[in-house]
Amino acid sequence: MVDLAKMETEKQNPNTMNLDRMSVKEALVVMNKEDKKVAEAIEEVIPEIEEAVQVIIRQLKKGGRLIYTGAGTSGRLGVLDAAECPPTFGTPKEQVIGLIAGGKRAFTEAIEGSEDSLEKGKEDLINLGLNENDVVVGLAASGRTPYVIGGLTYANERNVPTIAVACNKNSEIGQVASIAIEASPGPEVLTGSTRLKAGSTQKMILNMLSTISMVGIGKVYKNLMVDVQPTNKKLISRAENIVMKATDVDRETAKQKLEESDGKVKVAIIMILLDVDKETAVKKLEESEGHIRKAL
Image (cartoon, rainbow, N blue to C red; front, side, top):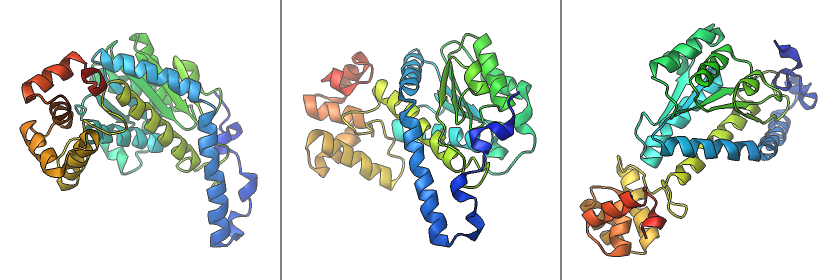
């Protein structure tokens, strides 16, 4: 077991030893300077993130699921990323899943001791019916959370690809997973408060994993989210704007084609660009595995 006090995420930051004596502006400036280290830390692990994205794309194309598992802040970030995939990319709610130690209640309040169970990390994946088409991403700022280790270990036993995202080098979860993404932004402004730089680091890595994986399975055309679900006024307007940008038509035409396509942005775009009916557009997309460029 690694000594917690020796981890980068637990060390005192020499730049904030007098945090309680700083003016508000001084504290904000030093926080901002420390936050700049997050992107730099992530830049160093782009090769590992690339490898992870390739695996996620492969598993999603097989019909598998992207499953995040974590505790505390890390778990909440995984749940958040999973929750944002259906409205952004039109994914079924069961395609990207966030598991958090302690269950749903742990998203809004601390569940003491929930992260300390290896067995619970395994049990939650068993309850999902984990299979070889899935991919499991274990999230732990410290890199030592038992709940995450238990989940990753079980996934390995089931021959499911595993990815670890930690904010300490040579982490325990990194040793368990087949791919270790270990981006260390250094000690926190507030010692041990990993909701700060470590949380930002994990959030940015999750942005990369999910967004670029969705690009890889055809959820994006140019830089437009063409599988957005128009479920409210804002998203209906966004869907219209996407069709307009992708095809150079006016808003009335975009509205008309979206109505004809039952609100399916991709279908509307193909209908306009290829001047075909809905049925033909749907067939074109099926043949191209959902990629608009291939369909064109």
